[in-house]
Image (cartoon, rainbow over all chains, first blue to last red):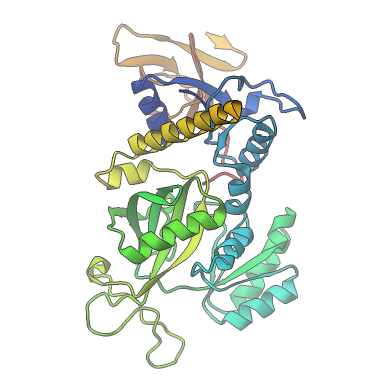
Length: 327
Length: 72
């Protein structure tokens, strides 16, 4: 297989992938998108005769444009620009999940400070304000009061980029101190882990502790449906468990027993793994998924499974091309 | 050797490592021999992220700052 890797930065994830591809004898064309130009009919990048190009761009804007250009030249690329377009934008991501009836946190988008404050007040406190584009927990705000809401919204209005004036407001989900990250290829789970933290943000990039996680039937079903909802590919599907009773005492998370606005937190001494979730909510699907943490946290050889999928994808494309010629 | 503000290094006789000059600290550092162009490594001296610009000679540059659209 001749495989191209779109990148601007070789992280441990890309290194794992490159090593696995080389170990299997595949030819690799590394394409540093910072050095290339993309015209309407051709590119300076060496993409001729590649069986497949894998988008590993760290920059969302570069990822979206480069994959769109390659697609227009007829170069097979994963993930597709359509999937990237949906996943790169939290509002589009939420809409796609909701349209597919995948449970996802209640969300509203507003375009002015006044409308954003109305949305925040309608959710009540705490609620969450996120940038529509971004990752690794950057600029995420858990809003606990009207005063905080006014300050955060006012500050966001001054940040400059127009996207900061697209206010993405979401219900706060009282997860049991962790969320679940699943790497899936065309809806089939490869590996799953929990990311735990005392902080409300549990991203591995924020220092959340990772641990292997066994998906139950419901989670597996939701991963497949979430993948389909955004167009498939190699994806990082993020789920939160809802209704977890961590110690079996009947007190679930997300419950405000005395109605005073103070939620029942999870006892940090309890191991949430001992609780069982009533259900899950899918809060995000990522299209340039990192997998080094999953590779370390689980027994799965993640890069090997990813390359298995890439090989199958390339074979499928080759079969399709042959069928097209035969027809 | 200074190459356009970058610092070039050399391969040592030790096959497990390469040596290169840290462009920030100006000190010679050892980096894994299997690094590749585009790879990000942490400087053992300053902790700064460095990008491998070339391998022959080994040239390191301070890696680009985090940008707003970086991520997954």
